[in-house]
Amino acid sequence: MVKLASARECRLYGSGIKRNRFEYINAGLYVFATLLLVCGFVAQLSSVVAKSGLVVLLIGLVLVMVVNIHDLFAHMAGIDYRLQYFGFDTQLALVEFAVPVVQAFGSLVFFLGVLFFFIEEEKRHSYSSFEKLALSLLIAGPILWVVGSIHNSCQIYERSDGHVQVMQTSVTVPFLMGSLLLVVGAILNKQSMNEVGSGHSGLGYLRESWIWLGIFGTLFLFVGGLTNVAKVFKMQQMEGVRLEKLRGGAQERLNRDREGHVPLILEEDHKRRKIQIEEESQAPVVQTPYKDALYKDAVVSSEV
Image (cartoon, rainbow, N blue to C red; front, side, top):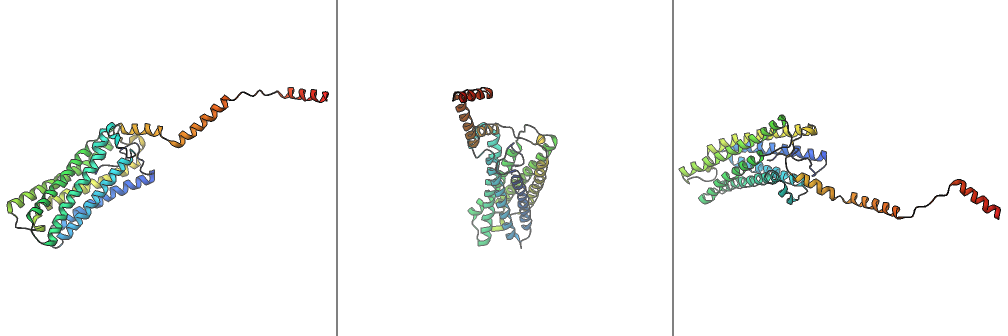
């Protein structure tokens, strides 16, 4: 999950109030999604509600995917969806575009892995090749989260004080730690199943190492989501001089293009210049003084 608050100087996917509301909803939805992930892993400790825990995990992963897709559209709206600006701003491509794409794709892969185990538990049949694929997906999904978290932490700011930097670090570090724990848990789970053999099916392939590391990993994600909510709130309350601003040339190029493509202003300016040219081209009218006009009227009346 890449941050939203004040990532760029200009965000045009809504008015100020609407934009702030969407950022709060985005941050709060991620907290709720990670809380569902924690509950889903905890449910795996009990054989009674383990299957329901998989459903909770699926719902949480869908919400994480939705949050990252919203991040992607929000970042692209900031540049009017003009992908050609990637050539002027490396950070725009590697952070604001790549991070939500990688995180959303990782959530999708993780979702498919959990879904395969849920299907196996429903059918209660053992298909070794199918379950091996599911175990690999449980590894690949968190690995993509790790890659996205690393990219998310590689951000350069034009200006930001120590308080802003601490808030940003408090968001990126828990995300990275949680993703790493999920990767380690999935790898240990697959290794343990290779050693034991394929005498299990469905939930029997999900070992305690994966469950406990998943609990701690999702707790880190939950903490990162909470700190992100606090960060969004603080960033909305700060004055403009303290707002962090990502370094890059896409925003400057966009501002220049917008200055040259404002139809209403250009049309009004064109009309004003046309009227001015017509006035200048007309011959100047010599106004007769008031006394001369009275004299001419008197001469004409005397002649009559």
